[in-house]
Image (cartoon, rainbow, N blue to C red):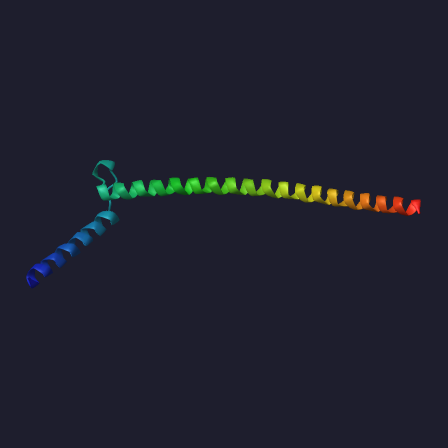
Length: 101
């Protein structure tokens, strides 16, 4: 049992070592790239696509925030106009009421 365990450990170490060497010194021709490397390339491409989508969404959010700020400023301006109009109307009514007395 102990010998079998050592054999498994050695095989795992060799597998890790050959995998490391294969990844570190990968061949340049596409036909000889391992499936592991192809999987990593595919994952990197998907990650790049997700990053591009995220950047696109961030720019859309920034555009929407700018539009929201513009609308907010317009609403504040409208609210001020309404408040000033109401105050002037009340002052006008008050002055007309005093003028009758």
